[in-house]
Length: 587
Image 1 (spheres, rainbow, N blue to C red):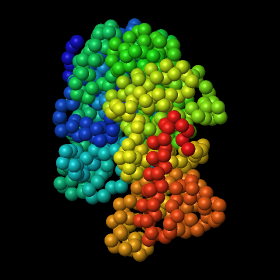
Image 2 (image 1 turned 135 degrees about the horizontal axis):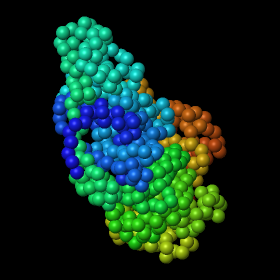
Image 3 (image 1 turned 180 degrees about the vertical axis):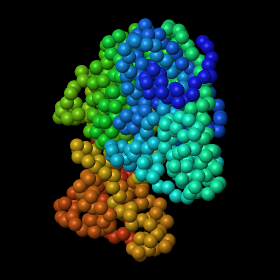
Image 4 (image 1 turned 45 degrees about the vertical axis):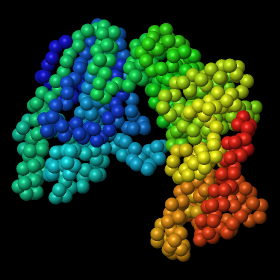
């Protein structure tokens, strides 16, 4: 290897844009957020070292022997997270980046691209929740953050247009067009930065833009080692070594890289990343990653050792996974469609690993396409749902899941596919830290769950076992939350000594129900006594039975009594469900 320090950022960005610099399949995908990118540019502006890079020179006679990917320029958290596969003609050598992908992609996005991440509190499937932002530099003031000197921010075009006496947002990518020093001064003059903002701010603008020009066009900021070997084993060993400290390359990234190199007919990286996207778009959406898929591959192929380690991803195992890939995909797909039919999604699924035994069971019984809807599999679905909920509530898969996965796999094998072995699984873990048996104390603790906590949906699922989640359901406050603030409580004549109780328990389980979306919209923020008054006769009786409504006065000022009485009803039902014969149907 040789060491060089002769590359400017502008020259590297040009080569990335021209697709001479690519990413080998052994690289993980881009994971940096906008704050990390902003910090990197601030570090460059302050002449902080950003560490050296490791490049791999691949001769034109070898480039077609390996799989390479392009750098991301446009990042969209939901729709565009994966690097496109590079189309290599083999007419010239390429430079593959072994170490420094996150930094180089960040620089490339900051100068040539944009970044779209989900806004807080917006739904994952809302396309408007991902505003497109570019990197800007404020030319009038330093950063207000004490950790930064220069004010780099990702902004929408609309946000960047808002100029005032303290903010003038320069699109960082435009510095690529200002190649000569005099062009920096021309820009400052033409845009009034020398004349319109006073001497102090004009001086800062000159300093900031001149420094940005220097680090992009003049200073050789990209120091790198160059590896020229064409031996993949040697390159893999170097890659592992350089990722043994700091921000470590995850084992799944490395294992996926090995799989990509060893599969003979399919592209492992492309297959797995596309499959992850497919699963995450089922129903209301899920949140699996390639770690989950690789772990599932080890379990579903009946490998004795299912740990994430290089030895388990040898050539023999990789070829077996490739051979069984279609069935692996189908079993996982059916499992997620099943739990989607139970109403679970990315927001309420507290352990992805809990889905692997379900996928394994479906694989062993022949991958029935209509398992989620066939009347003959109804009892099996009830057992699976009950096991899943118990597992979530007991946090069975917290910590190291491998022993749990192996144990349940063994039970499923020994049960010969007769039915999902809920009772045998429960018996197997009795008296262990992973027990699925609930004590009275455990059940009392469940009642303390609140609105917004992931396990709350699981508890309510036990209480509402017959809901058809082909329809949309919401977790709804019986007594509307909009009324639970100091002003409204006073307006509704709640006594001062009761205010704290109201505010403390509005989000607790005894004030929650699962309600279909249409009646929930109709209910809106109606007072509960007004809502109940709309229901008459058998309709009200049926509603009270389905939602465990006590026979008390529903007036807002009687919330405390209502809460305590409904809490008793819920505890009684939960004890019946959790302390009864656990292999019975949920009823």
